[in-house]
Image (cartoon, rainbow, N blue to C red; front, side, top):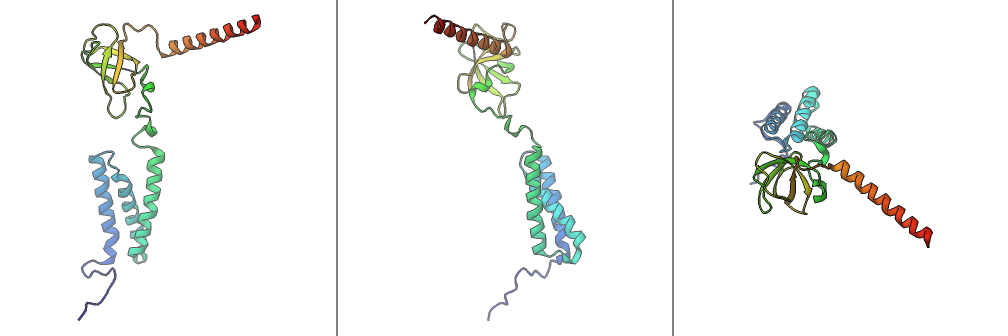
Length: 194
């Protein structure tokens, strides 16, 4: 009348083969990560590979439940290690947090930049380093090194040729500090006179 209920039992799969299957799957996912870096297959691949190897060492004690717990344990450890070692770099430094962080960055002109049109590629521009660009003065030919002088708040930045830039980010910061100290002295003098 009814089929007998047998949980987790497959006649064609020997339980001793399960660790080997985990090893093969782990190697396969690790290879997939090598072919498509950043796809995050490495975490699951390492978890399956490690659980399979430990399963081989445990022998007959490595049942499906024990192997599942090992996959979970090694997966958590692999994820922690992956995040801690930051294999693909930067802990988010490849991303710009706001447009002001682009100010002072350097790059190269990829399409001639004019006051109304152009494109540049920033040296450390994050995931997509290409930005629409405008120049302050005249045209900047393709291949010229440029520096962002005004990030503009979006994908369009204002740039200046490095040949024309006489003041870098450090010089600008020092000038701002001098101006701030000068303003502070002026207020102190006005306070003393009053």
